[in-house]
Image 1 (cartoon, rainbow, N blue to C red):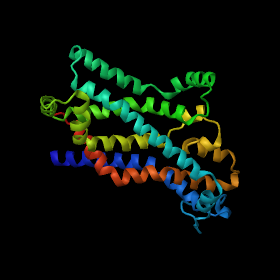
Image 2: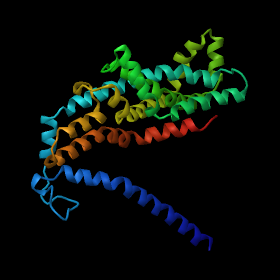
Image 3: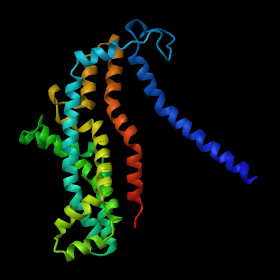
Image 4: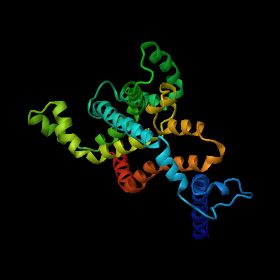
Length: 282
């Protein structure tokens, strides 16, 4: 009876996985199918899941006749700025939360929950006041100023991630570095960072993925087409595309999501391994 119950539980779990997979994968498959349809199949009823005569004309039109590559470049710039800025802020913060004993343990836990609480605040709450502030000081349509908001939004997440990795690094390394005459800053950069490179890499990859699809912040703070990242650029592309070119819009959506999917697919074992290591406190 226990074996049957166990098998039923396993079957129910896999059925749930299959349902979740279908919910998330089916829209992607449909968009991919639309991107391969020639124009004469766009309005065929009833619609088929796979086009009868698939072609890559929509992808060619998007890559050669739209500013998609410019949007990708802008997104890469924002992602690079976010990774560099967020790690620069998060590394000292994570070191302080992991190594320094300020106040009681309750206060330290409260500080970490405060950081987590900041991360849970929706960008919608802050972006509208920021728009008024940026507009007053002339920072609308400024890439560096917009990148600062990206960094501020992602820094709490990076701090939590890096603290988990620092917690598993033995404090004996700190003590040995102190005996050798290293300051705390030297200990962080010359001793701890080389040890936690896998955690830094995993955090950087996740920051890129989180930044890749960012929509609300650039949508509010940027309105020039040449400055837009992918999330807002696709919307701008949609507004200039008529209904008969839906296959081009679908192709643009696939090309937008492809880099992040490839990054996660290629590096998923590394990311999951690093996250699992960071979750185990020594």
